[in-house]
Length: 461
Ligand code: NAD
Image 1 (tube, rainbow, N blue to C red):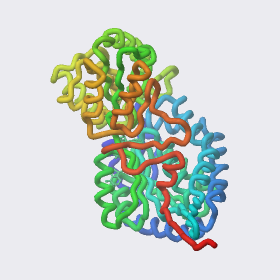
Image 2 (image 1 turned 120 degrees about the vertical axis):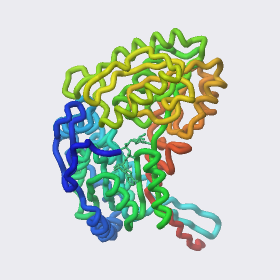
Image 3 (image 1 turned 30 degrees about the vertical axis):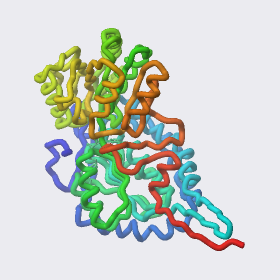
Image 4 (image 1 turned 45 degrees about the vertical axis):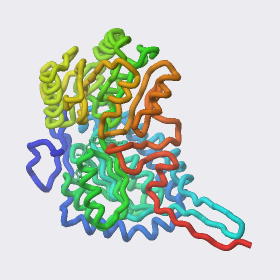
């Protein structure tokens, strides 16, 4: 995706407040011709970084967490000005990264400790070593959290890292990297700024692992480019998450979850509820409750008291959302709420009913504040429709316990919530199925994705 159209100076990347269009600040663009030198510096920093134990690397990062907490107000405001989310959410994102840092780095250090396997006469030690240089390429929707959840495990696992944040939100990523660099040796963590050309140059360069979070199309392009050097990949991509609401569900909880999960961060969340399939027998009641919840959302500038959602991050994103809404209405969807004209990048929270799979809005990622509903006659029909997608990041089902569990098990997503959100118990991986991902993050299993596994076997008496 492109930056604001006014950003015509190729040596400077300007960041704009999506609510007002005002410039928030700028960073120098990294010339593509510089990127090989930056990678060489990261390669040169590897031996000393890998000579440290995972726990030593983890301990180095802990004070960065404290610093982030101390700077949460200042950085949270910057994050919100640049991305558009209400300021308390911006501050919350920074505080979350800071306050979880110590626990996270210890978790990674523990996950990458060697395992020992023994048979009679042979002992095998399974080592988890960093791959080398990791390119961490990240999106704008959680502009500190996304760099954080890639950089931290990559570093502690023994990789040096080059971060390429989204061109929409370079300032907050730059501040994040500066804070970490106060505590890291030279060359271990670097940042490059620019648009996809800088990302492409990184992927094509002498890097060993590409940890990418972003759109499916960019992910596919990266996979094709990485094939040349058989580079390791972790791809966290887009989705079209379904919510299923069945007879016997707690409709208050289902409606609250559906509205909040479709609208939070203005729908710009990879696991947003983008489709709702509700059983006909409970649909009218569910719709009433859903609408009540949706009407609670206040769209406003991030500075405004009581704002629950801000603008879309950029004009192109707004145009994409509005065109999907219009396409759906033209094909027979019923407009229940919203779709009111709004200035700037703002989009009013919108509810559509009678949505069908010949509408783009039910098949192509929307990433906007739209709640799309479709009635189904049975749990089987709900499963069939929920799985009728190329994506598969998350899915949620509300219903009578036993039926909901059985439906949950039939869904093809990587993460499924049954009568709750899809967030798992601590230690669960963050994993997409189908075109929503390739490899995965988080929890001990996810941390090991940043590692080359090596097995050393010896004879034992
Ligand atoms: P995007 O793919 O346009 O850009 C992401 C990053 O990749 C940016 O830094 C961009 O400059 C860079 N880039 C773009 N094309 C590239 C290429 N060919 N080679 C190398 N780098 C390239 O995505 P976006 O619009 O910034 O983010 C929104 C997308 O991210 C949505 O699809 C959303 O679902 C997804 N996302 C997924 C997760 C997840 O956990 N699966 C989390 C957050 C966001």
